[in-house]
Length: 508
Ligand code: ZN
Image (tube, rainbow, N blue to C red):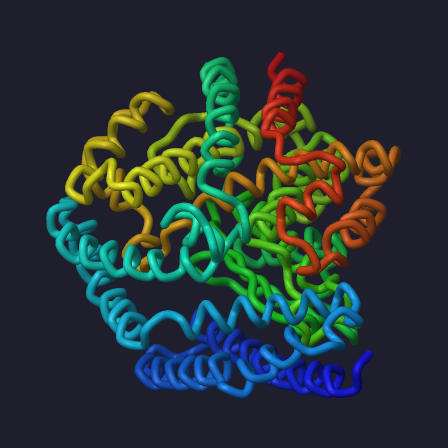
C-alpha cells in the first residue's frame, strides 16, 4: 500500500476512535439519566449532554476528516486497501456527508422544533385531541422534508422517504419495504383472525411475584443467555427503568427492565429482548473496536437479534421446558399447577389491540405496517398532516379490526413523530422478517440447537449467531448481510410460516 494513503487512513481512524469513545461516554450519561440520576440534576444533565453533542458534531464535521477522505479516495493507494479498510472509509464518508451537507440552521431549528413538538404532543395526548398537536407536527414534518430533499441527493436515492429510512436500514428502499410489507400483510391478516379466536387462560400471568424474586428470575434469564452481569470480567448489568432499553459499547453494555409485580413475564421477556441486543454489541469482533465496521449492521438487524432471543427462543416450548421448573423453584412453587403447554398457550396468545407496545408477536408487525404506509403517504404527498387521525383509524379498523375511540389510543400513542423520527418504524418489522430467515438457517446448520436449549444450553445458538451475524459487524449493508447469512434475499413468507407453524403446534 502507498505509504501516504496508509498514514492518512490511520490518521482518519484515530479521529474516529475519539468519536467512538465520546459516544460511549454519552451512553453512560444517558443510562445514568434513566437509572440513578437524582431528579434535581435534570437541567445540569441536559447541559452536559448538549455540550457533548456539540463537541461530537464538530468532531464529525471536522474539515480535516474531509481532507483525509478526499486524499484517501483519490490516492493511488486506495485500491490496495483491503475490504475492511475500504468499508471504514465508506462509512466515515457517509457520516461526514450526511452531517456536513445539512445547513446548520436547519439542524438547530429541527432540534428546537423537537422540544416544542414534544410538549404539544404531551398536551394533545392528555387532551386526547390531535388538533392540539397538528400545527407543531406540521412544522416538524416540513423541516424533515427539507432535510430529506437534501439528503436524497447526498445519498443518491429515489424518494424523500428513502433518504430517511437509509439512516436506519441503509440502502433499503421504500419500494422494497412496500412490496415486502404487502406480502406480509396478506399472510398475517388471516393468521391473526384464525388464532385470535383461541383465547387461552392467561390469568395466572397476573399472580403477584414480589420485586426481589423477579430480580432473581432476571438473573437466571441473563445466565441462560450467557449475558454476564456478575462475574469478575462482567461487561453487563441489569437495572430497573420505566421503559426497558440497551445501551453500551463493547466492554460495557447495560440493559434495563421493568418489574411489574402483577405481570412477572414482562420482565422475563424484556430481559430476553434487551439481552439479545446486548449479545450483539458484546460479541462484535474485538479487533474492530473503535472502527466503524465494529458497529451493528442496522436497526433492523439489531431488532432481529433481540426478537430472536425474546420470541423465537423465549416463547418456545424448549425454553419453557427448561425454565418452568426454575421459575417454580424461585417462586416456591407458585406455578406448580402450570405445565409447559399451558405456559406456551399463555405467552403466545394472539390478540389484536390498539397499542403497539402491548402487541403480541403476530399483530405487532401490523402496527408497524400501518405506520409505514402512513409515513410513506405523508412524504409522497398523498396524505396531509390533518388527515392523519382519520387514516390511522381506518387502517386499524381494516387490518386489526379494532375501533379507535380517541386520538390518545390512536395516532398520538407513540412519541416518535414528535421527536422527528420518520423512517424508523419499518426496522421493527424488518427485524421480524430477518429473524425468521436467520432461524431457518440456524436450524439447518445446528441440528441440536433446540435440544440444547431444553437442557438450558443456549451456547450453540449464541455461538452460531455470533459467528454469522455479530462478527459481521457493519461490513455489509443489511440486504447484503441477509443474503450472506441466509443465502436468500428478503422473504417475509418465512416469518409468516414460522408463526403459522408455532400457533398450529400450540393451538391446533
Ligand atoms: Zn429492541
